[in-house]
Image 1: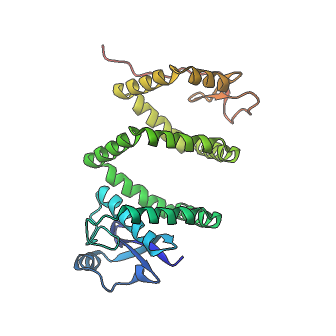
Image 2 (image 1 turned 90 degrees about the vertical axis):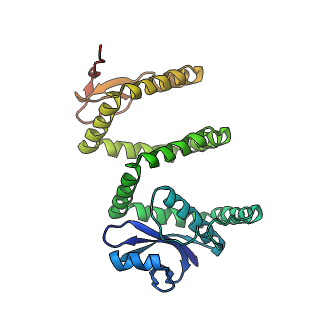
Image 3 (image 1 turned 90 degrees about the horizontal axis):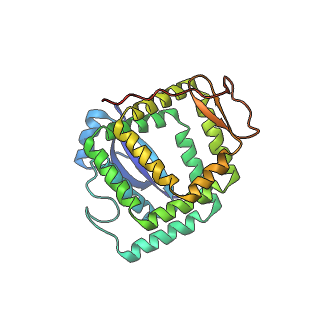
Length: 280
């Protein structure tokens, strides 16, 4: 694919400061950069990273605009002089242009080879521990801001207030879990996670802190009450747990389905969890 989108990061701390679109060796090129870009590079240096490849320039432009919008919304101080795309800051593509770009993307990703290539690029990125660590730190810094958390919370609320969005997400989830291979992959991920004592300790501490918060307990209780008010939900829970047995390792409790092997370090039974006492 000829075109791509890329980011520039400060060499000394890895903070993203520029997002661009290019081809060839443009992501490494230091020519034709604005004075703000040059000031940052003179002070910090820079590294370049290609994020995604695109078959058409229009799609690369559209992805550039999306990235600039997202990173600015996350609080990054980008030195881009425009909002990306072919026009000046604030330009909005016409309905016809957006429809054409959407159709081009749809046709491109209808190709199994294109989807496989995109999946492989994503897999290689997330297989890099340094890449995961950088993104994790960037997300941690972003979400440490109350304003950023409030903006993200409002976006999520607006999304789930849309009946079409909820229906679409529900259908995607249904199709995913209807795939036996997907269920097997997810099951293996969870199993591997809980084999790690560090992962179990972190999860246990997160749960302890969550349940120590009266507001969090109230929300969980209300969610469970609303969920179990549905006859279908109660029937589904009954089907999943029928014939199951409780096992414990002395700290955590788990339910085993009929015929499932006993996990290492576990035995039949159930330990009573301590619940933080409420103030009188």
